[in-house]
Image 1 (spheres, rainbow, N blue to C red):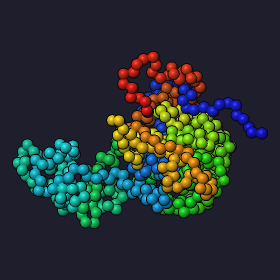
Image 2 (cartoon, rainbow, N blue to C red):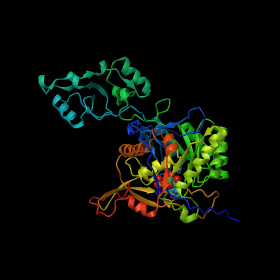
Image 3 (cartoon, helix red, strand yellow):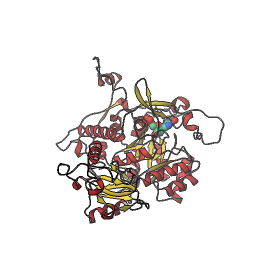
Length: 500
Ligand code: IMP
């Protein structure tokens, strides 16, 4: 007879956190959001640790190279979508790995025949005091010199003086070359007491500038996630069909972690894929999922999964529950799998991080997921709204939107069938094609979301994710208290909060 769980399964929206005592250290700037991505033994460190508890969904409309770089800069990891040819996925991984962190394209350039008056106008426009002098005045022109504000005094000179007369000419410049590593450039800057180092190619064309200040304080990206060679960390989605050819290509391209991408991961297909990858590529971490039960977690943990994703049917574009009748409320799933993770740790001494995947609508859902035991969350809709996601920005009735579609929608499946375990002409959709409101650059949105998470953690007296999980007290709420929780019984003047 079928087993019936009579307790309803719950979603994040049905829970609130009850504040705990906050001592005087409990301020957001003291909160550490770092979290393990991959499994580790008690007393050891994980192979990959993130600075923030966020990874981006393995989706065509979310995780391309631009988003991967932007997220790694903030301390999270993108998983490039696997719903594309092996060659193009490997190419995307290479693009991220070849992205030169710390190398910036010069956006202030001038010709040697320009005057100091021209230079002053340029400086006013760009705000930069270091200007590259190239033969044709373009950013990749042949480098002939560098001029900085130390080279001229507008109040004491003829403004018609040519740039070439006062610049530091190429013959006196110390330059780096395109294949130099960031570390090498850094050393050149220090050894020669430079403020910036121009990087040129074999034809003496300017490719980048590397600035001393970027090393000194990492002000802009204090949380960035880099590998040993100072390249951004990036993950790749894989499937259970072509992994024997896809995995070697992705590892060769430089992927730091892999993740089996399936709406339902408690299966022989994931077992076979995990066994093969662990036997052939023991050094590459591989995540698996999705599961929503203790049994599903244990199965994947026993087969060596380095992290395990939780969630069936809760994604914003997902219609799996409607079409297949499988799934479970996300909060209940996270709570059960977190208990299984802790039980596994107590038994084996191995900690297998878990990820709450899908269904994050408000920033506080991230905090709830973490409080319930998730080590990090995977988000699709959230990231799809940003400049860096790969989809079109479209104006509808005066408002900007970005396109966002599910991997199980007809649009994504134009590339390949969703995995139903067998070759079949019969197919049905498990996701929709949609628009989400455009929200600007990733950096400022992630900063605000993480600040909110930290603020709530302070209310719970927790300065780390682990502490939050130990201290959190959660309460189920009634439908009427959900109404009470929003603005109510007032006419809001500027109702721009429809989507968060
Ligand atoms: P979101 O953050 O709520 O938009 O959910 C994103 C998650 O939905 C992804 O990480 C996947 O786990 C899941 N997902 C992506 N595409 C589909 C689909 O077409 N059907 C069902 N679930 C999907």
